[in-house]
Length: 267
Ligand SMILES: [Ca+2]
Image 1 (cartoon, rainbow, N blue to C red):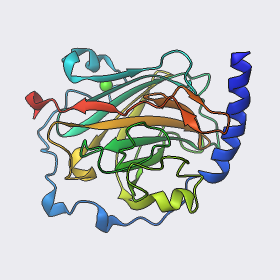
Image 2: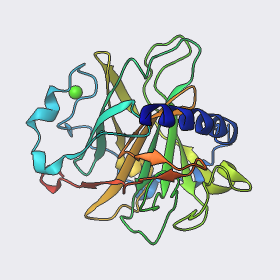
Image 3: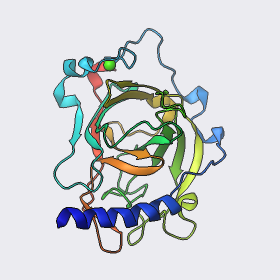
Image 4: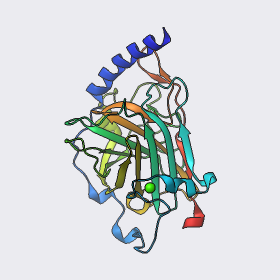
């Protein structure tokens, strides 16, 4: 009974999400990314503990586990396509590893199989928003890009970047994508980011972004992060997870974004 109830709600919500939350081909604004003279480039001699081109995630096992942030799917998630999220930052890169369910997240030829990354870069609850998915509603930046090309082959995750310009801490009573102006009002295009990623086996996404190319406003202690994966731009997985939706399609059971400490020993 409970499972059927959830599936029925999901169908209703997915329709609403598909209509109001489709990504837009917004013009990018490279001028809002950090200027090159204020952003240290990655030392070409620096070797990250994580290799995103080795077709293996064994390198994660060598990390100090106290420096690795982990979110697991638990019982009764609303989206059940993501099983585990690990994030590790050496202060140069933000490395991520996601275990997905390949029976749910399939690489359809001609489909748009994308991923969003949400970040609370200043680790402050006073800035940002997007209560839509996260209880702390402190998302400052959102990244949106595809993981597979139209032929169904993996491509490096090189997302467009968007800054939250909606209500701070918002929206408290309605989802930003359902509100007047919706998605376009809540997010402002802020350039694009060249990323590195690979699909390991048939169920793991491993990748990284360069911190200095994202923003120079990261808090010294660390940041908050969340991921969702999308099948043809409809959400099928989210971590940290939310548990359910209410009768009006509103999201309930939200959790905060995952806090990721910087591993200063690697800087
Ligand atoms: Ca690896």
